[in-house]
Length: 115
Image (cartoon, rainbow, N blue to C red; front, top):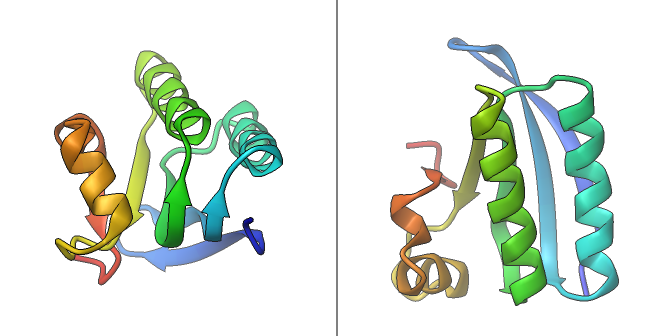
C-alpha cells in the first residue's frame, strides 16, 4: 500500500518550477484512485508538465499502469506533458515493468537521478 502521494514543486531552469507527484510503496486498489485524484486535479488546473515520481514505488498494478497510460494520452492530446521519473536500474521493478510493456519507449522517462 502506498504510504503517501506528495505533490511538490521543484525549481528548474527550463520550466521555472516543476510539479511532481511523489509516490512510495505499492500502488494497488484504492491507491490508484488516490493517484487519479492527484493527477486529475493538476490536469484540470492546466499544469504541464506533471512529473510522476515512481522511483520509490515497489509495485504498480495494471489499474495503476492503465491510469498512467490514460493521462499520458489525455495530456498528449491537450499538447501537455506527463513525465515518469523512475530508477533506470535494471533490477528495478518499475523499470522492468516499463521495459516489458514497451512503455519505456512511449513515455517521457526521467532518471530519478535527474539525468
